[in-house]
Image (cartoon, rainbow, N blue to C red):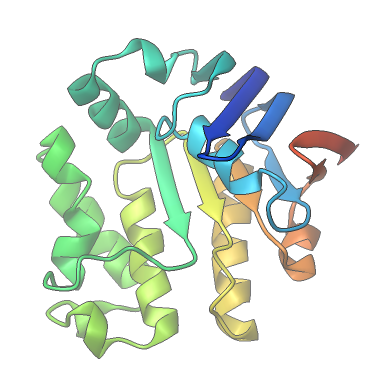
Length: 223
């Protein structure tokens, strides 16, 4: 099992009251699976994704990614683990504005120091049709091009898992299809994809749909 979330709880502490964002959620994603998590805004989807990605520690429960509990690792070890095992794709892209395309794609290699990363970066840049944009910065790219850079960055270190938060939210139909086909292909090649989305077209690409409501799993279809 590449992603295993068992009895996850996450509570946000506020001045007036505490908010339970994720309430006793258990979810597993195996190699070759593409799972879409849906539900209304505020139901806990993004929080669950951040917990799965080793970015937000749960208040209860167990997380394992590729048989490793990321929260058992020190800060530097966890950062390296994320860079090596997990690819992240976000709606807002999170590209570094002052870096060009090549350097943005290469960013995860700054953590791992893998000498083969440059060759993989060149291959991914070619694959995503960005060869004539290598020296461009994000502000000089179209929205679709920026998301392709983000995809290349996510795939650079050959991760086992991709976590995607509304990756088609800012894209037109053609670019959305390209993103979803890339994620589907990644799963078909033995990776695990956990996608948070409101997009019914994105859900159609997934093999399983999990619905969250009020921080809990309301429905788990397919798979």
